[in-house]
Image (cartoon, rainbow, N blue to C red; front, side):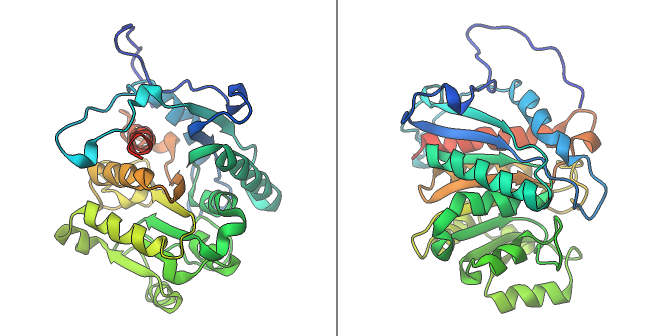
Length: 311
């Protein structure tokens, strides 16, 4: 991604550049922590997704930590974003494979133990397994999962196409999983049947043409949080239309609009039961020259910041 030189304006402070959690006093409140989990080695398609967390950090500097309130109660902020305590825990080293997943789970658990919300930036969709398991800890029996994804991610084996199946096999109840944006011609009959057998609630992409994304997210949060446990939200950017997400190898024409994904990120982060969000399947090395996919991912991080400010 080619980025223009940054202008300097003391009245327009930039986002990003957040300090390490270690700079916060022990016991001090952290509102949101960013954690890179750059998985890529088990991807079903060639990818440079391991480069994405660094690219997202660079892109954050092009935006401000400011979101304008309006007369809608859904945009009312309890605190200005500039007053939130935001930290960056860096990247998990080599998070693929059993040992790497173990490191990612531990890093995620540590971050969730200190922050109200952790945003894990991948990497391919394999990061969803350690991100969710680390966030849920001993609460797995009551946990819930929401995915915004064109794919079911219920494949056999260990890859970026298997995280939802792996989480179910680890003990996550299928009846507390909601999959939003599932697309035609991007899945198989067998995996669709597997989703039904698990009891997963599926919101097809066509349904989103008929329903506001806010209503869909409200329903999803209710289903995923039915047992009162923590919710993990997987934002797979390839759920978006390929015109806005060319850096996602599996994005297709006809996906979600960029604003829909951004709105879902904010709506999820505003919910107190959502302890963790991941952003997945962006290959920064394959993005358009203007960096639109990485920029969308960075904006989803900031939407999560705005959501926390609404709690």
